[in-house]
Length: 114
Length: 109
Image (cartoon, rainbow over all chains, first blue to last red; front, top):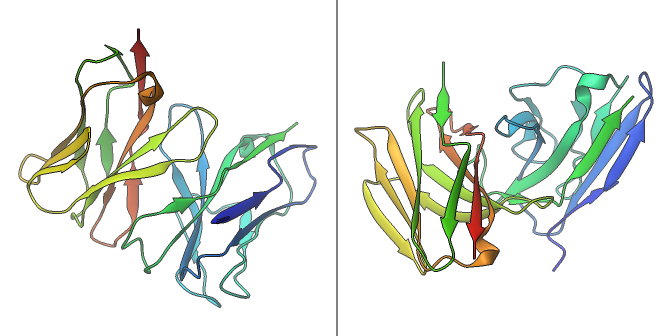
């Protein structure tokens, strides 16, 4: 059972470059989320999607965009990366909408912007 | 503002019991989660409390007092594999999850 797959696992990126982090789930969950995790801080929600075709902004959406063309895929794009976007990014999903249930996380994507 | 407070780090001995506290101030309350996160890995679900009281699940128990804005995670018969960070998260009135920074638990032999 794969659950949630993220790619790449790790990436070093020059500032100003465009980058897409991929996220795919095979659990047919309606809701999906992107979080960033930084040392000393709690997980912060970037964007979310309650169901295919809809997306919403989280706590720290600036500089990021998402799309949800189908149930399984939820890519996160950094249009022009900046060093402050250096972080570990986690994709997650849940059965219900609006965080009503347990979250299942991918293994994370470690991004370094130089 | 909304806030979740947890101790940054705790140390305990293998075989012992440890209690990790979490206090919260949020706009409304729709449940509290505990997650475990080993270094370099993804968080995994441990427990969910929405009513006051103690929920027991094997060696792990979670307690909630909504009137005090307080929860704790109790780990019994500690094992070396319990060395991890423990994340407390609260669902607010908009069903958004507010996360604490996590408590790093170090288990010593």
